[in-house]
Length: 185
Image (cartoon, rainbow, N blue to C red; front, top):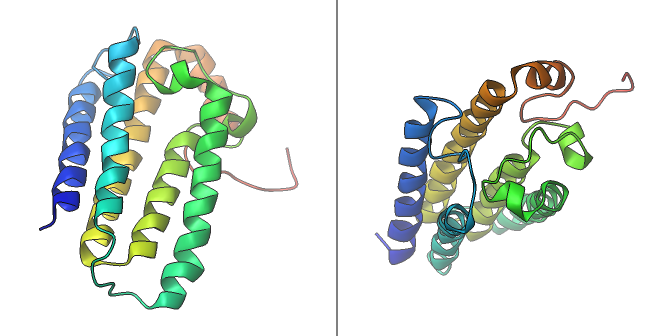
């Protein structure tokens, strides 16, 4: 087991514990915090960064996936996920993505789905894990993606508990994680 895998899984595990504690009382737990501050920003972004760092540290191990799959699927996913994550971060603002309560986001990518930042992170991590293609990278990518998927649900329930009426209206027209693209409005 490499240092990268240990680092990435540890950060993923800490996030998972925070999310489970938060899910016990939606809107009252450590994530998303009731009152974000510099400390919440540091641990939230720090843990997420450590997942990416751990994943990158698995680079150089023998890949088990063919090159055409690693680059043909992994590279577009990593780029698309990073672009979506960046767009969502810009739309919500750094404070909003760091735990400050900014209400219910409805503009930009948040008009397409309720959690585009999580979706972007899941897709970019999956793409990076595919590019690296080693068993450790794939396992870490899967663990981190599952944790982020769960995290989007935890955050959804917290927002619902804080803003029940606004959430009901927004969730009725905006899908949870995967955007719907249709010709109807």
